[in-house]
Image (cartoon, rainbow, N blue to C red; front, top):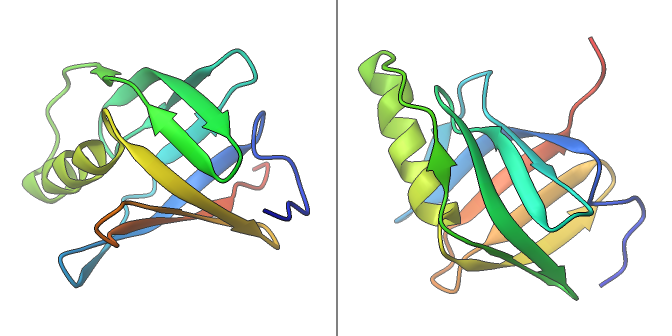
Amino acid sequence: MTVDEPLTGVEWRVVSVTADGATHRAPLAARLLLRDDGTATGNLGCNSFSAPATLRGDRVTFGQLRTTRMACDESRMAFERLLGGLLGGRALTVAPGHGKLTLTTSHGDHVNLTRSTPE
């Protein structure tokens, strides 16, 4: 894996999730931060989450997600269930490059992210 920028310590904005051949745009709140201490934090679209995360080579493995329990509109909750299902308890292939990051499951579903810019 060739990395042109760090993966950890960077806030990534979730752009979309493609699952079962359908692409779903992410709510603006959806974020992911991989930390050097072996954890991940972020927002699934409505609720914040944290999870153990191991980055090894071109794979990242997420442990069980712990989330807050806020209720949002149904479209954000549906996206949250989709994203949480792809991340929680899974190993994904990592493909970084030029301010973008793609996380891909063994079934070919993927999460597209872009490096967040300070507001």
